[in-house]
Picture 1 (spheres, rainbow, N blue to C red):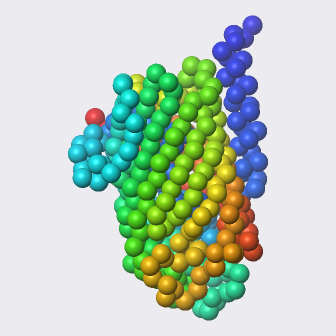
Picture 2: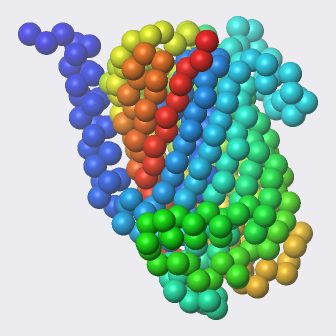
Picture 3: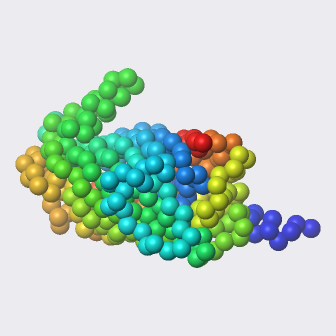
Length: 331
């Protein structure tokens, strides 16, 4: 007869797969680095992430993103790390990371040089992020904060990257990058709180999260929940990653409440962009569902994910993209 843990793990796996399948059939903005579902129980590692909607059968809206991040204790000595907040509770395990991220956004129709009314503006961002995650093992909670600095506009090289990729793959060249959101400064700050609400060993986990962000790129709040099942190391413990094979699936639905989005409305200071959307055209509630499969083998971490997002402006459309993350735990 199957044991209770095996029954619970199998049930959890079925639930997650049922939630995961609709996300695939229906299909973000920025790349997530401090979420529980892509946690690595190591204080030092390197991670590369690639998002692209081309593999989802489209080439529009949030069209591509790329990041390289590095986590190490020495980053806690950085002057930027002094800007990161977390409550100084006892027995907190704190990790620090930095990331370079580039994202590009295009309208649904890229054939025309002139802006199309009721379509998304061309936009690109190039960001340097400094972040930390503080884990409270005793109470099953995590605190994360992120400071972001960078640029939006031609300096972010979105036009060069997308055009070069389309030349390589012999695809339609985007014609309207001359109308992209103009150069402006990006300064953003984000706080996250994640609380575990269900746990069964390293087989099943559920947590809720809330996030608040403010700055010149994006102002929003977010509420979400993460379900994980399989064989994993809990993100709510400070245990160090050990060499072994792990496998799990996750799903992370969330609701975003939008105040401001510079990729749609233009930069906070430079108002000379040739085409942007007005504030009353922005969708103030955006649903997003991220689902993925993760495999650990020795010190190597590989993740495939698929993301669905509801429309970001009132006359826009839902959108989906997928991507991969590859990480290596370092000594």
